[in-house]
Image (cartoon, rainbow, N blue to C red; front, side):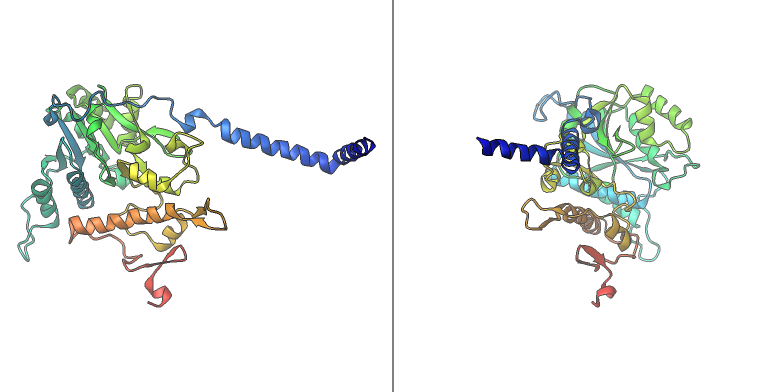
Length: 385
């Protein structure tokens, strides 16, 4: 018994020293931080407070008149024409019940030929293939833009809002062409009635959660199109399609869940995926996320869009980092990086397959025979090949 009392006194003396007390305080602080990080996230940041809309019918319902629904894309440049035809090829491969419309500038000539070889120009060839190979209804329009816009990438983005004027249809699903369709989207046409439905997307800080116009389910209406036209006329220099619809329909937008309907390529570069997964405890599996995604959008600023070959130093700087593997022993998990790089490679290969001559990647800073070594891209001349 005396030994126990002596041992207790030694422990009390040890704990009474300044160093021991400081250690105990630090341990409690670290424990508190861990609890806060695990359990006290801002609910609005982790999962949007808006309930996701669900289809009201099954796509197999024989009473559905699919002729009343249309997939819609808009193109304003040759580059986006190629991208759009790539999307149509994916939809055709996957299959769809709804038909397809592509809006394009009315000054493009479907019958234009090269004066040298009398073959169709690249634009004419792509338009013809969209119609004949992928069963797309071609829809010439006057491009909507604002010449004073400071960002060329989005200068013509108002054109997609012409979908509000397709009043001969009950619902149209617009798709941005700098994307990949990975699964059937027909069920989105069967969401509850609303002027517009959009994915609610986590953009990271400081933007946070915001509705995205990369994919929009629209109920066409002459009244709503008049509102859209008025909003475009009065838009500020740096207000684009997404800004307009978020402002006009702030309290009326039907919420489409980001997972699996709007996976951003930039998701593979993030350190945390709680917002996309909707949970702080769910484990991130990049292969599973990609396999379940029905629609993927390329968004990796400052890495350029996938039809522009990025400089190698930019890729090396912004490609996803490898993580510590759960297997331990110093192993690395580089699946995010491998998937991300593969997305861009697959896009380049698909572009060549679908669009062919006249639609080559736009930059030669990183040539096609660049070599991946030690987790970075190198010009062949740099490694002696």
